[in-house]
Image (cartoon, rainbow, N blue to C red; front, side, top):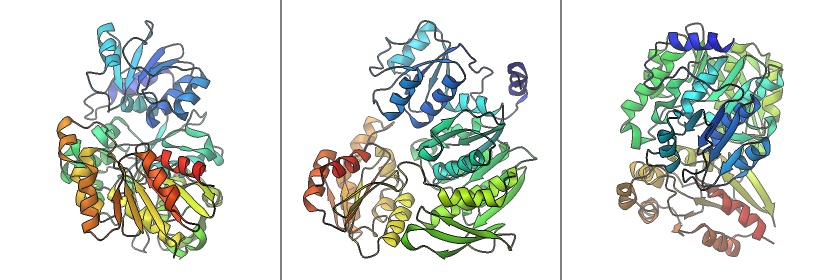
Amino acid sequence: MNLSEGMDRMHTHTSSLENSFNYRPVRGHCVYFIGIGGIGMSAVARILLKEGCVVAGSDTRPSSLTSTLEEMGARINTRQDGSFMPLETDMVVISAAISEDNPDLKTARKMGVKVVKYSQILGSLMKEKRGVAISGTHGKTTTSAMISSILKTAGLDPTFVIGGEVPDIGGNAHLGKGDLFVAEACEYDRSFLNLVPQVGVITNIEEDHLDYYENIEKIVNAFGDFASLISKGGLLVVNNHDKNISLAMQRANCKVETYSLDSTSDWYGKVLSTGSGTNRFSIFRRNTFFDDFTLKIPGSHNILNALAATAVCTFIGVDKGSIKAVLASFGGAMRRFQIIGIKNNITVIDDYAHHPTEIRVTLKAARELYPGKKIWCVFQPHQYSRTRHLLKGFAKSFHDANKVLFADIYAARDTDYEKATMNSMRLCEETRNAGVDVQCIPQLCDIVKVLSLNVKPDDVVITMGAGDVWKVAYDLVAKLK
């Protein structure tokens, strides 16, 4: 499809997108990303660089993602003070976290440069290919990574944008020559409604992002809107045992296939064994044996992710032998139960879990993988608002850990009011009342000191959170002798 044809398709799109736009950058255009180090922002920046765009941006937190972009030719500023934006900038891309008082955004407004959201440009890129969008409160990144890995290994060379780095397939983004576009579809700010996929996945629907949605009814309604966007000739793949999904999927105008760990679903996974961190399971399709599969990433939640990926890739046309081989070798995404190191027989793991359900299933997987071992959990709450809204749920999520250490809350999009009404000590008290051995140690550097003095051979340490708690895992491995 050429650019004018893509523009025609965008003009005829009649969904209820409030911020749809009819422009996307092409080779030679200068695009400036405010918050370019974000996992999604950096992924789109990589794709535009590969397409021949001039990419610049700002981010106050340098990272491996920004370093990679600089190596690819992006110009990045860490001050984000409004002084770095090139005069030749054609478009500015912002994430949902950027507020109107951001100095870079103020500069863009004064310059009269077109400003678009990350989700809008992602939707524009997807419209040019056959879109596959993976949504849900949990499991999006791993499921997106599985699907992208299968399609890439099968020779379909998809473009993909994933909310995590996946070493097996070269990172969090790839500009493929094939006609498929796989994207992790985030529900915050109703961002995923900028996508118009042919294939969609809903892994689960729970309370989250309540600073935006207010209640579960509005969240379910947004997922219903997402389901309605999938083209009539396409497919929606959904978790069969989620009451919120059962409400949202009623809005779908396409074929729907379900998955679960029992025979009531179109895609049924029967667990055979979970020993030594390897999941072995059989898949049945409409009660007919499909094949036996293995996964080397632990947890029954990852079997569910594999079922969703299998359903999607089968619909696209990938043979089951290829799906089976890729899943057997799939190493997972970074920060998803990632083993950072093993020193003195002490295993240090890092995970992105930042919601009560994610914490619970990750610690359950750890307990199954390391029965009888002492598990230390270091948790850095992400957002004051999320901690306040889900306080009771957080407190009940840590029972599979022997010892829990809480860091200060990592602020993101939080107002002064939210910061004044919640702190880690309150979470610590609630968790202690739930019968968990917990201690509040505000600073990450102090947590590393406490761990280095107290962990013993055979112990397991898991760092959790969506902020910078991963530093504890790396610093601890370096400190252990």
